[in-house]
Amino acid sequence: MKLAETEAELVAAQRLRYRVFVQEMGAKIDPRSTTSRLERDRFDPFFDHLILRDTRINDPIEAVVGVYRLLRSEVADQGIGYYGATEFDLSKIRQSGRSAVELGRSCVAPEHRGGVALHMLWHGLAEYVLGHDIEIMFGTASFPGCDVGHIGQALSFLHHHYLAPEDLRVPVHSDRAIQLGVLPFDKIDKLAALKQMPPLIKAYLRLGGFIGEGAFLDHSFNTIDVCLIVDTQRMSQKYRTHYVRGQAV
Image (cartoon, rainbow, N blue to C red):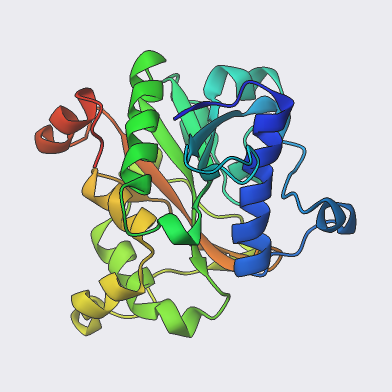
């Protein structure tokens, strides 16, 4: 587990992202990126890239099996801004005066899912957050596909149980907005909702995370995105203890 320090390590991260987001999830990207088999964008040079390597794999490109990209608020403010601002109005986070980090492009190679890989990525994230005195973690998290009907239980459950406090409740941009409260409170099936949620979203919720107002329909990546926010000051004592120990979730 380390931050990418070389061009080759960044390429390895972008290769894994291509494998997961393009080949597996059907994201539409620039044809030049398809030729190179790399998923990359104009924000990459401003992010730190946390990579997890499988030391049993000799090929340094294929050895990267987990990725997280991280953008601290001071870097975003001095450079290109936040990637998530293309989907959500992040004014409340930017104007809070608190140190923040945007999380994105998190993925794990299929053959490493269900094991310790996600836990190790979160361990590395915890060290990064503690090392930079981060107060707010946030980022877009995705449901695969663009059919709201398939995840109506999950979206409604999030809206009724995990809506962020007003001071951090960032709204989705209206051009491709989806309202989360599809179902009324008394029609929600919690077990069905949890089955519809990707593991990463459930991990954020266990950590004490909230969601912003509304979801974003991302046709390019074939996803429905919510903005997840974790305020370390509001984090439950149970998970704060785990996080301070660098264990995350």
